[in-house]
Structure formats: structure tokens, C-alpha cells
Amino acid sequence: MATLAIATSELTKSYGGARAVDGIELEVPEGAVYGFLGPNGAGKSTTMKMVLGLVRPTAGEVEVLGERMDRRNRLAVLAHVGSLIESPSCYRHLTARENLDIVRRLKGLPDESIDEALETVGLAGTGRKLAGQFSLGMRQRLGLAAALLGNPRLVLLDEPTNGLDPEGIHEMRELIRGLPRTHGTTVLVSSHLLSEVEQMADHVGIISQGRMAWQGTLEALRARARRQLAFRTTDDRRAAALLGASDQGGWLLAPFADDEAVASSSLALAREGIGVVRIEERSEGLEDIFLALTEGRGL
Amino acid sequence: MVAVALEFAKLRRRNVWSLCLGAAALCVAWMASDAARAAQGAADGTSALLYMAPIVNSIVMTLFAAVVSSRACEVDHEAQALKELLCLQRAGTVFAAKLACSLVLIAAAVALETVGLDALASYKGFADRPGAVGLAAFAACQIGPAFAVAALVQAVALRWENQFASLAVGLGLSLTGLFSLFFPPAVQRLVPSGYFGLLSCVRMDWDPVARTTSFYSVPFPWGDAALLAAMCAALVAVSAWWFSRKEL
Image (cartoon, rainbow over all chains, first blue to last red):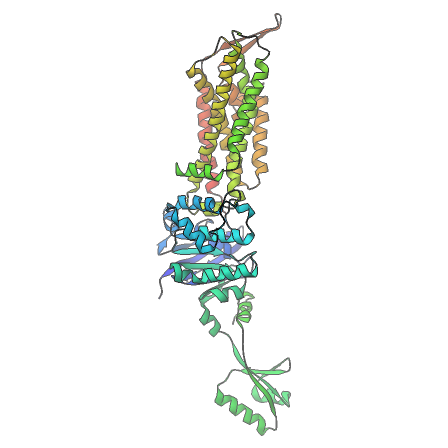
């Protein structure tokens, strides 16, 4: 089993009587881009804040980079972690360099680390321009630069593409996807957009109403997609009875079968004088799986 | 020290030093308007200024302390930076660094005011100019209450993003501090800004028949100084604990 960069056990947060996060067992493998997916208000940010120790869990434990986090070792563990939670931290009256210098001095890094981080996010040429004059995309990149300062082993990014234009989203996605390769960084990135996670993550955790609905590799999630055969025939009513299929929108949907079984089915229909007009193989998209999981329908 | 230096780095271009200069200038100008009525070379001219200073400071320095401590917290709220900072620093360190930053600014403003007061006394040729020790004691007695105000305002400013609350507390302390000067010491002791008056060593007698005032000195009120120190310690401890409990 791969080493885990983040492992939580029964992580729970209650506000009043309501459980915002309910017994989450997050497992983020080292070197992965882990997409933390869920609808707005599902508990993604609260979970990430608990991982960082910014919110106190009601119950449960957090292990980061192999260390069980508590009040005493929290800062020592987080010295190897970068984060961008909810919105980018950005002093608008300071330049990009001055902003990063604050984080650099807190992390005890050399001056050159600022140049490296600015170069990585494409803000090297901003000079004396104040962050208040930056576009939202530039501020988001500045936030990411702060998170990446000193090449941390783990980065937590909460909806990093929020408010970015399509080009900015593309750049951010490419940057995040490349982090394990270029910097050896593990990334936990949250999003409410499946398409976004699909394009940058190799592991996925789906959270719904505070509970972890599913987690594993993206491939494993795809493999869980339900496959079916769709038939159109000259007599759907009789064919449905013969195949044990259901009629949905003019198509008969039957469980997926191998080539031999499909051939037998079509011969059986022919013997009954039913002509087969079309046979299609259908599989659920990730969106269907995501909706099934987040709406509690299961797979 | 690094944490305090960082607080000043964050306050770059936020005009805190101009505010510092402005607060001191306002205090001196206020006292100068009073000194203008005093005769050149008056025997009790400086005593009159030292008597007036706590009244002026209970308004101006209280507001200044509230503004700088609020501004030191506002920069982080505005930048949404506390989530990032608290992953790199302990909440207690952030709190202490901000308070130390406010203290430096308060001390600078009071030092400027003290220098201005002495310059004013020198210009008017007042005979009762205090020495360096007397001026230092005066400055310390102005810094103490302003620090207590800063600690209280900072607790509110860090807890809530909207700085209206912290500035309202500052304004309230300024007004109650001023009004408390007209109440018995027991009432003054309840308000941090009331200590501007309590720690003053200059008292005044008003002769209604002769319609004259006379100033005299009293021993330094160590009891009130100790009370203020205890109040500061309690305020800092409770405020820091309150901030450390904050969830982001």
C-alpha cells in the first residue's frame, strides 16, 4: 500500500447539532493529485481546515506526512505543507514579492525561493505593481505561489480555479497536474466540478453531506461505471419480455453481456420474428456516478 | 523579533507612521493652545501642561491606540491571511507580535509628544521644566494606559473582521476615559483610559475667591500603576486565549 500523505480517522465536525463533517476517512497517497470532490456545502473546506488544524475536530484524528497531528507538533508538521484555503491570501497594498517575502521569512527560506515561486506561477514580471491592481487570476496565482514557496511536500488547494477565466483555469490545472512530477509534491485539491477533477487528479474522494461517499483512483471510479446494452427492435414489447430488458425512451436496456450472449440474444429475437434495428453498448459517465453518489443513490 | 518586523512589513504603505506623527502633533498643538495663554517664563507653566496632558491623551492617544491596533489586525483580515499565517505561526505569537507592533507605535507617538511638550516648555521659558527622568516617567504613564486600550481593541479587532466594532470600542474608551476624569478615582480605575489621569503626579487647586489655580505634585501612584499592570496582564492573557480559540 502506498504511503499516505494525509490520513484521517473518523474525522468529525459538528456545529450545534449538525454534523458538517461526519466520520471522514481521507486517504491521500503520497505523490498523488487527489481530487476532493463534492457539491457546495458538502464539507470539503471544513475537512481541509481540520487537516491544517485551523478548525478543531469534534472527533477523530489527522495524520499528515506520517505524523499524527496535535497542538504541540502542528507547526512542525505544517512546515512541510502549503495551503490555499477558500480565497488566496494577498496583501493588496504590497507587491507580489513583498507578499511572498512575508511567507518566506516565516518559513525561514532564502531570498531566491521567491523568484522560483514567482517563476513557477508566471508572476515574475509584476515588478512594483501592487497586488490590489492584480486580476483575480493573478491573485489566485499569487496565493498558489505562497503555498508552493519552499517546495512543500504537500499542498492543499481549496477550489483554486474559482473565479478564473478559461485560460486561467487551464494554466492552473496544468500547473497542479505537474506538481508531483516537477516538485515531488502531493496535492489535495478540492472542487465541486467533476470535469475539473477528472482532468487533473489521479485519485478521487467524493464527499456528500459530510460523509465520504467514495474514494480511490480515478480509474477505479471509471471501472465502477455501469455498462448496459441498448436495443431497438421491430417489436419492443415482446423483445423486452424475451430479453428481460426495460424500456427507456424508446430503447430497451438490458444488462451488459459478452459477445456470445449478445449473439444468442439477437438470434433468439430473430427466431421470434423480431427484427433487431440497433444494438448499442452504453456506459455511465463519471457525471452519472458522481450524481448517484452525491444524491445517495449508490452505484 | 522576526514576527514583530513582519507586522511592520505588512503595515508598509498603510501610513501608520504618519498617524503616529499626526497624533503627537495634535496633542502638542492642543497643549500649545493652552500654553499660549500662559505668561512667558511662568513658574508653573510645565505643571499646567503636565496636568492637561492626561486629558488630551485620554482622547487622542486612546483613539490613536485603537486605530493602530485595529489597523494591525485589519491588514490580515483584508488579505484573508490569518488562515495562512496560523499554519506558520502560533496564535499567541501572532497576537503578541501585533500587540508589540502597536506598543512600538504608541511609544513612538508618546515620545514625540513628550519631546514636543518639553520643546513647548522651553520655548515659553517655563521655570519648572522636568528633567529627563521626569519626562521619561511622564511618557511611561501615557504609554501604559494606551497599551491597555490597544490590548482590549486588538482582542475585538482580531475576533471580528469588521473593524467598525474595534473602532467603536476605541471611541467608547476615549469618551469614557475623558468623562471618568471627572469622577472619583474608584470609577476611573474601571476604565483603561481612566489611568491617564490616575497616573498623573500633578494636581490642581482652584481658588474661587482669588480665581487662581495652583499646581502641586503628589507622589507617584504605585498602587494604580500596579493595578494597570495587572489589568494589562489580564487583558492580554484573556484576549490571546480568546483569539487562540477562534476557528477560521
